[in-house]
Structure formats: structure tokens, C-alpha cells
Image 1 (cartoon, rainbow, N blue to C red):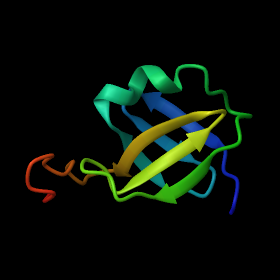
Image 2 (cartoon, one colour):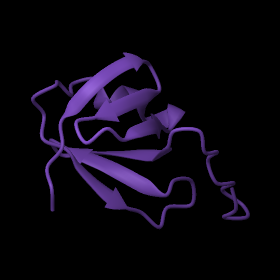
Image 3 (cartoon, rainbow, N blue to C red):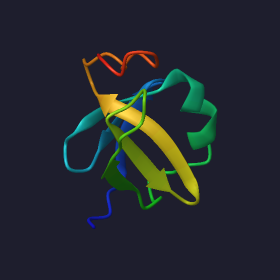
Image 4 (cartoon, rainbow, N blue to C red):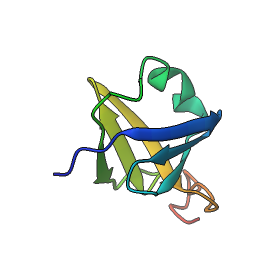
Length: 80
């Protein structure tokens, strides 16, 4: 697995990684990533979560994310 770093986190719900990808953080998980710093090693993983398509994992914290511009899945239907 490739370890990634935060390049930019200027908007509260969008994080840009050093590979150029931009991810929208699930609003309920924003507080989980408050301790992440630019030097924090992150791993992007595919997720079969009801809400998100991926997860960012760093320092014992798993945050649900989707590619910027996409909508979260509906928890009831599993659809976006």
C-alpha cells in the first residue's frame, strides 16, 4: 500500500493528497481527523461502507471519504 500525505486541507470538508487526488470527508468524521498533520502517513482504501466509497486511514483513525464532487450514498438504499 502506498502511503500518502496531506498536501492541502484549506476547506473543512475537502482534503487534497500529495498524489493530487481530492477527497470529500464525511461530515460526521471531520472531528476524527483533527490531529492529522501534513506529515501524517495516510492510506487510501476502498470501502464497502453504506455511506462512502473509500476510507482514509492514518494514526489509528479511519475517516470515510468520497471523491470530490460525488454525493454520499444513501444509507438506506446503498445508492448515490
